[in-house]
Structures are given as structure tokens and as C-alpha cells.
Length: 233
Length: 254
Image (tube, rainbow over the protein chains, first blue to last red):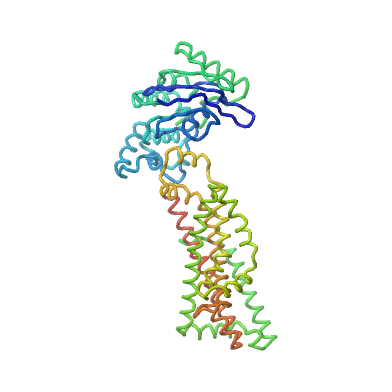
């Protein structure tokens, strides 16, 4: 079971995590919500091994798979090549291609297999990054706003697919979207501003909590509406 | 398809070359002594005579072999050390003084020392390494410093095998800096190899032929061999430009 014990992480004078202890249940999806800059992505980066805590214990089953906030695709590879990029080297090329093609078709990208990242929308690039993470061998899957660039109807369809696909897998999800968290999450934690404190959020208060976070965020930093980010599909 | 040059630009290039040749012919006519300055026609005539001799082609082949050998070994070394230094700061710091010395050291001093230390063949490769390596190394290092950090993290998280990382991420990412480095490095290699040959006198080579012509006071021969070097360097430049263009087209298609 992935676990953080008495973890301390600071950047210069700013303490992000102080004595943070957390167990992530195996085979379930644990969601984290919270305002921008509260440390959600840093938490994922710690679990992914991209950040090292100054103190404390961290145990994460390997290998890890990760959907970053930005797609991070190789610009000279096609969508299909990007999707199969992190698959196990033990698989044959034809096996990888077949699995990649099937998954991208399920994610409604059948027409975009040969296109390169510069030729597709932000939503398509995000689904390709999602496919890459799902196809990569993993014991734990980290999702950082995985559906944020999709329009609401598509987001709902992909969330339904993920709900079935991720059954029994250990997943850590960071999202601001109520529907995504509601569809995928088994438990939800709210992160408060640094140094981070975690509080469990019951599902009947989830929508209210997310609304409050969004309102607080729009008051403190003027942001463009979510739907405007890269014209969805 | 060769890279295109607009007709007006080409006209300017042809005009400037024509003016230079005419000036050369004029000055040669005024000097009127072949031993000091042979004219273009005299040089071309000697070039014609040279081209019918087997030793000319042997010398060109030997120089090109040395350029290919020293340039390719430098490129491999620069790729390995440049990438290593790009990712490991301690290695970059350790190599910094060495590269600075290599950049600053006078070419002629290095050639003279290498002639004392090594046999003529090794001296040529040694000198070229000292002069060309810093150019290629700096190009690779600058490329690594400009890599997309997000993509580096992606490779770390997914534990992408080293060979795949090299082939699918690092080399394509370093392409712009590598192309520029190779273009300047190959021309420099040609110049340095010939200069080293002049002083180290290997069995055969363009530099050796320069010395032979100089010793027999055949200035037309020195001019003709200079023309050979110019043509070879221009040919290598054209070949590189064509390869670069082909690479860009296949890169865009893939």
C-alpha cells in the first residue's frame, strides 16, 4: 500500500508538507482537491519520485504511471506512437500497436492515430497522454487533472470508461471537476494551503467544497473559464 | 531535392565569384610572375594536369579518410561527453577548464607539439580532436541544456529504456544544435587536417602535396591544391545541406 509517513518537504523558506502522514488504499481511487498552489501536483510528483522529501518515509509500489497536467507528448511521434511509447519493452511491436489502437479508438481518437501533437487539439493530446499512462505497466496510477481539456459530454463518457477500466487499480487523482471526482473517487481529501493539512471530504459535501474552492480561486487569481482552455475536442 | 536558393541570391553569389576571379586575373597579369601569383588559367591548367595523376586522387582520398575518421570519432566523443555533462553537473564543471583550454590553444602550437609527440598519422587525428571537439561538444551541451524538462520527467517516471530515450527523444531534440555543430565542425576538420598534414608530412595527403609544391616553388600547384580544398569543403557543405533537407522532409512526414 502506498504510504507517506511524517513527510517534510519545503522549497526555500516555504514549507509545503510538514509531518504529513497518509495511506493510500490499494485497489481504490483516492482523490485530492484543493486550491491552486496548495501542493496537489507536488504530492503526485513525490509519489512519482520526481521530488524528494527532506524528511520522512515514502513507500510507493513500482512501477508508477502518471498523467501529467500537460500532455508531455513527443512532438515528432504520432498519437499512436506516443500512446504506446511507455509500454513494456517485452511486448512485440504489433501487440503494442494493436493495444494502442484499440484504446485510442475507445477514447474516440480512431481518426487521429497518425496525427502528431501539433495537429490535434488539447483535448486529443490529453487523451493520448491518458492512453500512454493506462498502457504503461503500473502498480499505481497518478492522474493530475486528466480530463480538464475535454468538453463536458466527452469528459463524462471518458470518466465512465475510466470508472470501469480502473476497477481494482490503485489510483491517485487530482481534479477540480466534481463529475470526474464523483465518478472515479472512492475517497476524497481536501488539501488546505501550505503547510498542507488533509481533511476527508464526504461525498454529500463534495460539490459544495469544489464550488467553494473554485470561488476562492477566482477571487484570488483571475482565471479564464475552464471550458475556454484549448477548444475541447 | 536540394535546398532551394532564390535566383536573385544565386545571381549575387555568381557575380561576387566572377568579380573575385577577374580581380585575381588582373593582379596576376600586373604582377606577371607565375612564381609569385599564377593567374586563374594557369592554375586551372595545372589542375587539369594534376587530375590525370593517380597520386592526386590518392592524396585526396587519404585526406578525406583522415577527415572522416577524426570527425566521426570527435562526434561520438562529443555526443557521449556532451550528454553526460548536460545531465551531470559535476562532469560539466570538470570538463569546463579542459574545453576552455582546447578552445583557446593556438592551432599551430598544437600541431607543432603533436608532430614532436606522435607519428604523422596520429598527430593529424590528435590535432583535429583538440580543435574540433570543443565545437561539437559545446553544440551538444547547449542542446541538452535546452531539452524540454517536462519530457525528461516523463522519461524518468516511465523508466523509458536508455536506447529508446536516445533514439526517440535525445537525438531528435538535439537536432538543431547538432546540425549547426556538424556543419561548422566538418569544414573546420578539413582545414585543420590539411594544416596538420602540411607540418606532420604523412605519406600522402593534400597537406603533404602542398609541401611538395611549395618545396619545388610551384605556386600554381599550391593554388591548385587550395582550389581542391575549397571544392571539397563546398562539396561537403552541399552534401550536408542535402542530408539536412532530406532529414527535415522525412522528419515532417514521419
